[in-house]
Length: 268
Ligand code: PGA
Image (cartoon, rainbow, N blue to C red; front, side, top):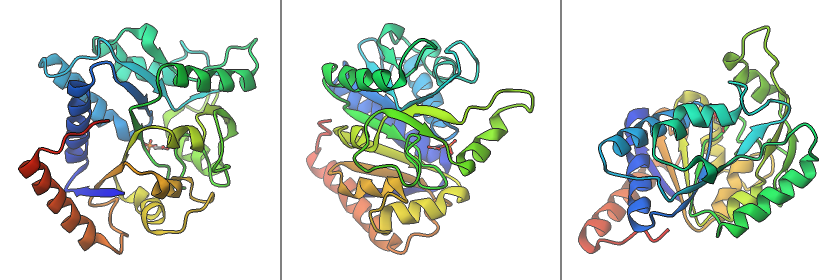
């Protein structure tokens, strides 16, 4: 794992946008795996700015989101489809026909939706770069603690903690779902490169367990230790519980200077 610790959430967003920009320069038709939640919002704002300044284009990009609520229609403002349109898709030059979420219509079987989503990702050539957040309980996507590390896209029940964490986004008279369709842990692990963003003190414990704890289904993000190409971008607060902090800082400095000297390309 490459662990990059930056001063602020803002710097995390700027650096993450830079990595996405490098990929899109090399591969204008990249397949991106996208996440929702509060953390990637700053990244999406940055990408919109870079697009408006003519630095990047999403014209030929395809996207697959990690998850979507079950029982929330796409045009409901609470759906992740609405979130993605609002935060990113409506603000850039992406062809919305090439943007996908594992949404399940009322008359569809969620199991089949999950299987089709997997096939769809495969037929698009797989994901070049997967953006991830992490839950305070260590979840990635909606793969909650105890999710099978071998899981594929399927229905998951949110934990009470996730339900509670997300309740700030719902008003008291609004339906708040407890079910979602999420890419599985194995589906996520098939991405060629993974970029996980975590900011704020609320993530420090989960980040510590993900990077330095044992690999366990009780912290689904810990499986990322088994992926060859993961970059974890943290602000100071999210990095606060890391024991091995000096080493991450030192390694990152070495890698940056190697890239400067040899121009090591990111071949995602
Ligand atoms: P957050 O969610 O970015 O809203 O904290 C992250 C996640 O639950 O994966």
